[in-house]
Image (spheres, rainbow, N blue to C red):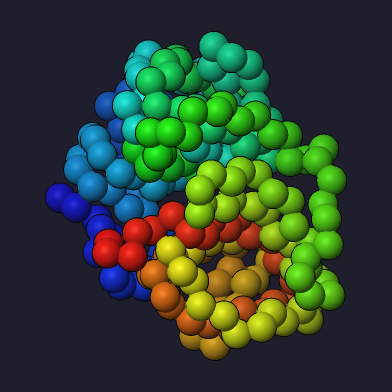
Length: 220
């Protein structure tokens, strides 16, 4: 059954309110945020690997993008600790596992066919640059076409200008509390704002968010 696949609607999910659901592999569990089909198609989720668990070797027919939130994720290409941002393009194959256990925020089957560059970024050791307003710091992670992916750090009391999202916006709150005129979004909140949506974001307490913009088609 499809989950949160109406891209004309704003979606807000507090992932901590979701149950962990078993996957096909023992020791690997998921919290589903959006899903096109039970085991295929467009997917956004949190995935938790128990210590010494693994997933079967597989090929990413639509690409894979993930951010390590806790622990160490490993595959054929290396070990990726907290803050690691990884993109595996369409056609790549690997066998994931975790010796000590980990939690990742992962997106599947959402790559443009021409977006073929693998990405490996250790965000814990990458410099931040100033944002567009005082109190914002930005770490760019990936750009392709109109799609932009970044980490954004908000100092306490930072406010951004009212703006619209051409091509939509997705946010995952990594720490602190992100806010706008609609609500407050604590750590673990996933937000998807539709194409042309408008808001005025701010953070009273300060926060860090993963954000992607410009990737939802106008006719979605």
